Length: 98
Image 1 (tube, one colour):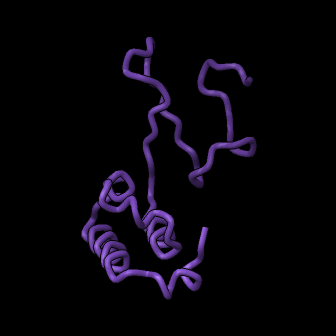
Image 2 (cartoon, rainbow, N blue to C red):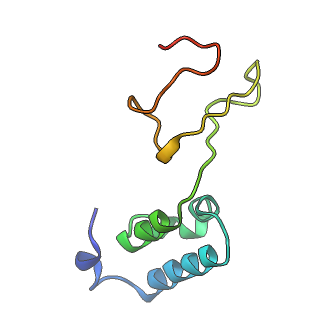
């Protein structure tokens, strides 16, 4: 992935404007999810300035891992520090570790 310096000579004003628009929307209270799922911003996802912007504003996220047809009750996982992994993974209530 090219960095900003490598792309600076080829960076069209349109891309800079899109990233500025994303920043304005985030400052106005839109979520990073709404920006990342908006097709109009797809062309700037690879730009380091856009990625830094998303990192700066990222607060929380909801991710569905199954379809709505999955049987049973939904399980909500809260990841302290925003990461689920070996260091933070604990079995849920009534569940055995894997």
